[in-house]
View (tube, rainbow, N blue to C red):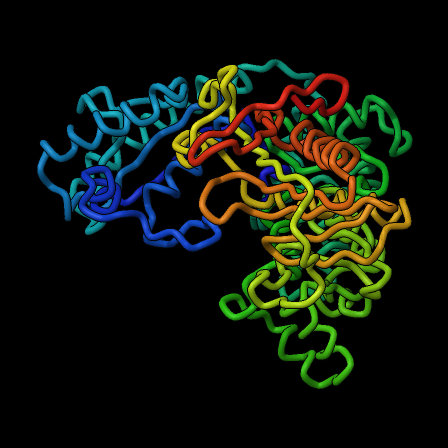
Amino acid sequence: MLWCLLPHSNAVYVVVFRMPEVLALLNGQRRPPRTATGELSEEDALGYLDFWMRSLEQHAPSAPILLVGSYMDKVPDRKDHVTLSAALTGRYGPRGLLGSVRPHKKAGLLFFPLDNTGGHASALGTLRHELEAAAMALPVASVQVDVNVAHFYDTLAALSRPQVAGKPEPAVARALRQACNAGAPNTGGGVRRLSLEQTRQLAAACGIKATKVDDPYFRHTLDFLREMGSVLHFNTPRVDDLVFLDPQYLIECITCVIRDFDLHKLASDGLLKGDAELYHHFSALKTEGILRPALLPVLWSSNTKAERETLLQLLLHFDLAVPLKSAGGYIVPVLLPPSHKVAAGWNPNPPEGMLLLALGSETAVRPTNHGLSGDCLANKCFLPSGLFARAVCRLVEYGQRSNGGDPVLCSDRARLFFGRHELELALHPHYNVLVLKTYASSGLPAANRVLGALGQILAMVFPRLRCWPLLGVADNVFVLLKVQSGLKWK
C-alpha cells in the first residue's frame, strides 16, 4: 500500500524468493494455499513473486531488477537451477515482465542463487558486483547538477546520519540537528525529518535561492531530490510541511496506525490501558477500523501537533483513511473486519445488475471482442494490494457529499449510497477482480461513479493499469463492455 511513498524508477530492486517452495509450486507438487478472498498465504512463495513482479511492472517499469533465489543449500543441484530459470522465463517472458531483469550471465541463469548457511561467498560477491553495476548504470548516476544543489544534497545526507566526531558541520545543520534531537539521549543522532521551513533555511545556507518556502526554485530542488531518492516530500498543499530525510520514518509513523496489532505491538499500546476512554477508542481501531482524533496524540506522541496534522492529511491524501461523520472520526478500510463477521446491514434483495472489474496491464491482459476467460481473470489480472481500500475511501467521501445513507463497510465488501443510488463493491472470492452489484435502477450512475473513482486512483498510483468492466454470460466466459463517454451497456 505504500508504493506511493517510495522512490520508483531511480532505484535498483532486489526480489528474493525461496527456491525450494517456488520449484515445488512450478513442478505442480502442491497447489498454492490461497484463502477464500484470494489473499496470499505466507507459504505461497510463487504468488508473492508474481505480486512483486507485477508491482514493479506498474511502478518502476524501467528500473533494473535482480532476482535472488535463497536456500541454495536446500536446492544444490544445478539442474534444478536451470529448470527453475527456464520456468520463470516462460512464466514472465510472455507477460513482458523480464525487460528490466538483469540475469546471472556467468551462470547462465535468470536469477542469482544464494546459500543461506553462509557458504559460497563468491556468489554473494557476484551479486554485490552486479548490484553496483546496475546502480551505476542508472541515468541519475550521471546527472550533472548545480554545485549548490550538490552541496545541499550532501548536507542533507550527512544530517540524516549520526554526527561524526571531529568532523565539522555547517552552523545551520548543527543547529537543526540539536533542535530536532532535543530531549533525545543522543543529540548527535541522525535527523529523520525536517519542517519545510527548516529545510528552506538549510537550502539557503547552501547557496540555493530560497527566501520563502514557496520559492519555485526551492520547490523544484526538493522535487529533484525526491526523484534522486535523497528526501521524501510531497509538493501538494496540506501535506507539504514535512520533509523526510529517512523514508522509513514516515512508514513507521503510518504503521503506528495501520498494522497487525497482535504481531506488532508498540510501547504506546500499553500506555493506553491506563485510560478507559482511550483504550475503548484503541479497541475500536483494532476491531472496527475506526480512528478517533483523541488517539492521535498517543499514537504519534513523539510528533508535534503540526506534524500530527500533516501525517493525518497524508493518510487522507493517499486514501489510507477517510472521514466518516457517523463513526465520529475516520475509517481505515484495511483495518475493517471481514464481511463474514458482519451479518447486518446488507441488502437482502438480488442485485439489479452485476459487473466484474478486471485490472491488469495491456501487455498481460489482452481482451478480445469476446471478452476474457476465467483463466485470464485468475492468472493474468492484477489487483494491487490496498486498491479496494482506496476505492472505498473515495466512494465513501463521495457518498457523504451526495447526502447518501450510512455505508456498511468491511475489509472485503462495502455497501455504499450515492443520493438515491445504491451499490455493493466487493473482492471476488476466487478471481483477482472486483465485483460491482447495483440495486434499484442504479446501474449506469453507480457503475460510472465506481469507474471514475478507480480511474483517479489508477492515474495517481498505478498509471500502467487498465480496468475492464465485464459481464458474466456463462461459466468461465466474461463479455467485455464498451466504455465510451461513460458506461454503455451492449
